[in-house]
Length: 151
Image 1: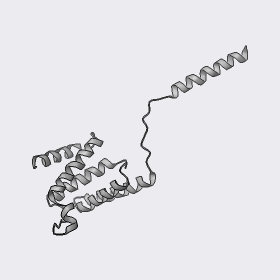
Image 2 (image 1 turned 30 degrees about the horizontal axis):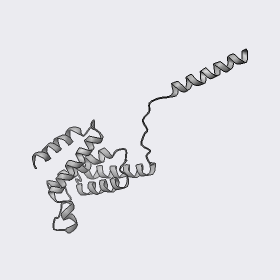
Image 3 (image 1 turned 45 degrees about the horizontal axis):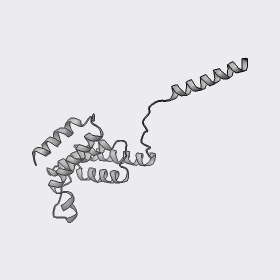
């Protein structure tokens, strides 16, 4: 009798514990720590290039493209999309310290003002899609509206 009671108690405890331990947890993205670290470095370098002092917008775009091609699942890809979008926007207005030379064949297609405006709109829209509550939301929406009005 004593052992029967202990067995029933053990079974009840076993089933009740497993029930409480179950949760509806969404599967997190399995991120590669090496790629995450490299992408974070590229993001930091891009932020430095984006500063008002440097305004090296072409460098930001190159860093973004390199990172996105290698690791599109970067945890801060929305922040990188913001930098790439705003850099494309500023370059389309011929702003920044790195000037675009459309006489060069390699820059002609990549940095044509119309393409830069299209890229800016696409990057910023993707950023808002991935992170609708982004701290850059207001500026991104304002820039997208300006780009659409200029078409």
